[in-house]
Length: 386
Image 1 (cartoon, helix red, strand yellow):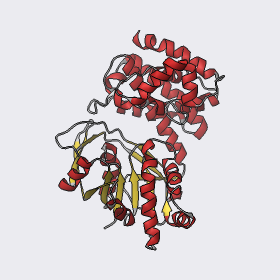
Image 2 (cartoon, helix red, strand yellow):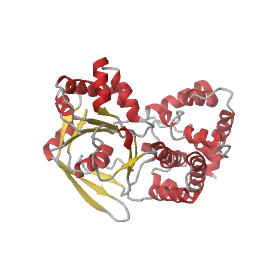
Image 3 (cartoon, one colour):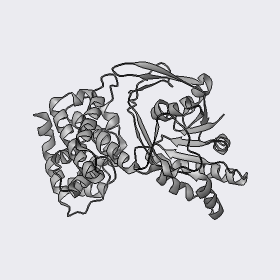
């Protein structure tokens, strides 16, 4: 039976990518450092996905096993896998690169000529390419030749809201009905696997930026506005009329940048924006603003959901007042349980708003955006509250 490895047995791994692989006929090996989760997977050999939407349903995921990614048994799994996917978070990719490199080395030593495709399913642009560069650091010249011939690293974009809902069984997952997985067709090595729910794309960057500038941008700004207003969940926040209006305007601003850059149809993109906002309103997900707003330093870097759409839109001389307001709100995020939030507030206290954002987002100190963000930082609390 064909085998897939899913690095990351968390909610996204189980509720999205791992589930699609299982339903496509793969035996899915979940690899993770969480011993409790891995033991439970090996004990139950199945779990339930609860689809919570206007119409609710359940999906039983079977034909699975687990392995600790820090133990040697992972290498035998890599040797016999046809596809490897990740859902570990962009910051963790370098930590699994050495493991993947050793597995690839073992495949070469055993003269295996079967193809392996590794897809990093992360909220990051070109995550698979980034992972490939990390893996290459651990390979010699001959091993690199083997990698280039037999190992593909297709980039992808992933989109499904999977909130951390606790259930009686730690493996069960709550998800929304909507999902989208777009994968770079040209980057596969060997025969492309047939996986229901995997959309092969030739214009992947357009898909990646559409999702980043729409879902991720709107989601984050909703969370930061909701936090400022003392609201707990995304659905509560987006159902606040004032927050809804500002979020939709920000998404339209980022959308105008996308429409110009990628020649999207304006009417279709506006429908896409409203569809995304409808997902935010799903009352069954109860997605915490603290989850969506976490790690603000990452969300404020130059290639992520706040600064990149802002800079893209400004590059086409598009008004960005609402995106700037969202950045100002993000800089207010102060969650003592979030390490990056604590670090952000310390930076602001030490260096001020403009210098802090210039450092995080790698903007020149004389960029006029810094003045605009400082202005909205000072105004956003009263704007949202009144």
